[in-house]
Image (cartoon, rainbow, N blue to C red; front, top):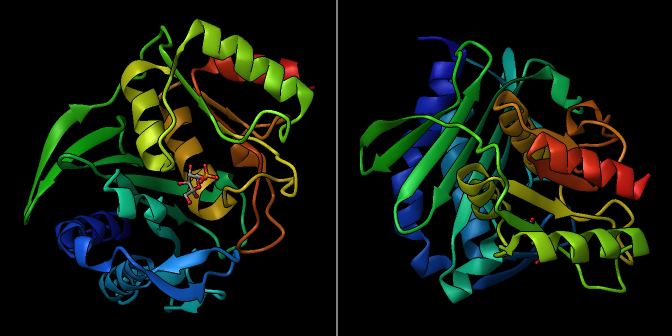
Length: 280
Ligand code: P6P
């Protein structure tokens, strides 16, 4: 079994247990993560589940989590970067949450060009995962039910975009971003739900654009390069879509620390080009 097989199976092997444990852990634990955000009980618990499943695998050399300040040395092999419970504030309102994993062939911090695989697990009405790997030709989606993992086939990004979701409040984004959001929301249907994995899955299904721009008080936006922006950019670009921080592919963003953030847009390539033109 390759190192990538081990990570994919490890994430799939925990996903159903994570899903089953969410309802009882939807409250805030009182701690904050390294990004200064309030930790939900489930954030810490999910991180422990994935750490136990991944950190001892052959071929995993580093475990780096949105919930841990420092990287954990696991020996030799790939660096696994994880947002164990993406969008965890959605638990209180029973809205979808996810898990995002990036597998890097380099110690972190590193650019997304070092990614060799990325996974996006979505805990919605049912649990699915989207998996992009350098050693596979297609980006595949799986249905995860208990211990059963069944392929739902190859993903394909629709050519014609339908949805748009750009975070932030008007007046707290740049005027150029506000104008772009107004324009796109006249053209496309608004889809924004507070969990990147769920919103990006809408883009994969219907075509469109997701974004978290620079906002007042957060010049690099909110999303973390290693755990959120780069792995999902890897998936979108593997499907012929695009990504940008406003100037360049998110895979070329060079993070200056494990928890570095980046302004983030992902979706159909033509829409990403419009973002770069509008924000130039
Ligand atoms: P806001 C979740 O906390 C997250 O990191 C992403 O999953 C999501 O897209 C974003 O933050 C939501 O942020 O400011 O709209 O609550």
